[in-house]
Image (cartoon, rainbow, N blue to C red):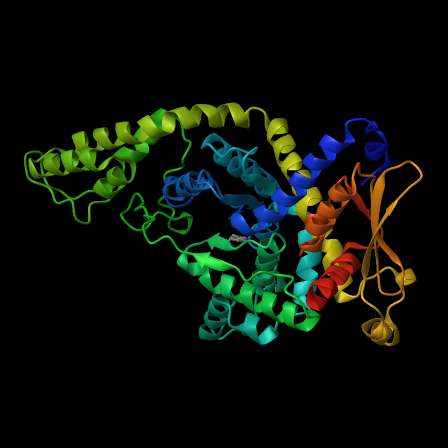
Length: 463
Ligand code: TRP
């Protein structure tokens, strides 16, 4: 904590404040256990289409409103570099995708919304995990294997045209997830293997460095999520060139809807809902009652022209207000930039920076003046336990400090009005499992956070 903030607090009313701060620390510790962290990454390539909206954006935003979840949504722009190497397009796509999520109702004050490249700690963790990840595990990644198989089938060198970025993709994705210890990761089936790899890397890291630094994430697969058909009836996908962009102007949306492939049944002839792209699209936007009504119209022989008109109006009814917001957002890219930066800055302060302090300590990237080396580690093991010391100063206030087994100062409190308040705060600190629980105006971490956590663990184990 910085000096200015500490000194800025007046001496009066400390007791109420101290109690409140203790509450804050307590509730932080509690929130670690209660709120499930859910994390979603969106690769910033291309322009969002209706399939992305129905399959990803709309359900994810609905999920972000659930109670007891802490949601993380980020633009995976570092990932996008693997495929897209056109800088102007990368920038454009990042803007469009950010504006899309905001226009569709993501609330950047209620969820964490940020851009991957704004959090350099992700890249640092990426390297730590790179040094843990088995190359053999990465050899089995579907995307990499598909590229190798294709090359082999074509008689090319197995790795022709394969970048190390493509090969390392799963490690960067693991860093995205593990840096925030996200528990649940909603993904499509094609990404499940990546989550399994993230678990593998997390486990290895925990094992090698001897503590549960990382929770093991789980893939959350929503079986309900619809895949939307595109203009030609195949799955709507950029790679098929059959998409309907989410935010085209109304007239263009109409044109696109009218270009959806249908069969040659004439007006008056009953039509089949099964296998009808038009019908499936309608269903993705309509209530069950509306869908039943549309099915009746099919049976009664609605003309394809009328069916398309109804579909178009139904989609536009949902999209029009979002489109309006989208256009306003796109007209002010600086505001989006500011939103993203603020999100990243808050998140770095709250989680990423303190966690990296802990992880750097874990792997041995440590302050040299605190020694290190095996000899002193061994000495430490034999040394006495760390100790919380409570005392009263000349100012009449009550303080405590945490000393390691060799008497080195690890943590120093501010002054409290009563020994009870000081004691309560100690009780809270004793439960701290992660560096972010050590961020409090009530005390200062003097050594690095990793050393404090080690000491707390030693105390808990001894208790
Ligand atoms: N690979 C994901 C995709 O293509 C995007 C992504 C990057 C991601 N990092 C992530 C998803 C972390 C979930 C968690 O869809």
